[in-house]
Length: 492
Image (cartoon, rainbow, N blue to C red; front, side, top):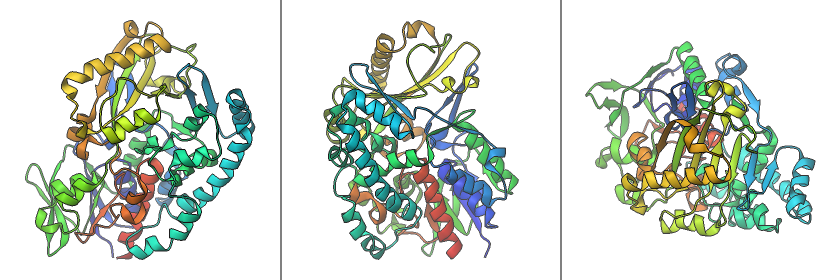
């Protein structure tokens, strides 16, 4: 039966779900709070510079291909992906660099520079991550976990794959060198997890990158957002911007529509929320309709870290800086810094950074002769109590001084545009609970069945997509959640 469906939020989860449901013949309208689509993938345009607000690492591109194919279209007609080589350039605290890509021999040659004895260990590690990848991604990432039985069925596999170990501990079984351990264990940070806490299942991210590569969308990640919006509108869907949801309407235990902040009411047979799961339950659904996800239950959930991000453009290029498209700059402290962020919830004096330089691949992201950057520092979410109104400027200065001293000479006199965001942006603009950048933290006891379900346990005809539900954050996870929601809705 064809349904009238409302999607809350136009992040990648909402856009993917909308197109998939339109391909099934349903009627779909997306309501977006902001003035542009994209959610965390919002695009900032400043004086000829273009900055992707959020995700920049594109993996598992077939998940995008599937969306366009289901609509009878070819993804290549809408946006172009190009491979990144190296996948990342990782710098240690002495500014020594380590590159890796899908070429096994090249990666071994890079490992040899730090510890030749780790070459065999890495080869063995890679073999084991294939088994984790086959189970954790190929078999389970697009399958719903709605009952305890769904979870119990996979427990033997989880035990066999040593999922009780953290990613860092798992990697350390194979790699001896301290810096290389960091290079092969940082991946949980891409989805809001602490490598010392996140289940070793997330070691599959490394294999996933090897399997399909790391890509960049020409025109930026925003080009993918625009392509999906174009596709949705071609399919007959609607995207309403500047339309913030005030409440999900519930009658007799079932979602029946939404009320906007301006008072307008829109009825629907099904609601799909791409908004933050905790925010959806706490702020969009009246307490009398929440038996499981009460305020107390939500408060017991562990949420991921937040981010401090600076977007900046320069009136000169830095092609001789030794930087790659994706750069990870690791500080001397690793476990201690992550402990400060995830456990102590305190803002440290030091940091590790992700530095994105898209103009090395795509000069169109800046005016001619200029360079576009964004630098990201993981920080605690708002439980830290950090006064970002006073700390933001000082924290920004510390990061920029560090980059100028070590990687980008004379940086600050060449900056012509700049914008930064802190955890309050995630809370106030993106409606993310506690200012978390990745929603529910991906620890074992908050994964699969233990994670907020794709079909609401409190309200019928309400479904969730995005970072906070199964399988989790990151583009492959978010796109897989849309796949799950489409299946569940189509079965009803």
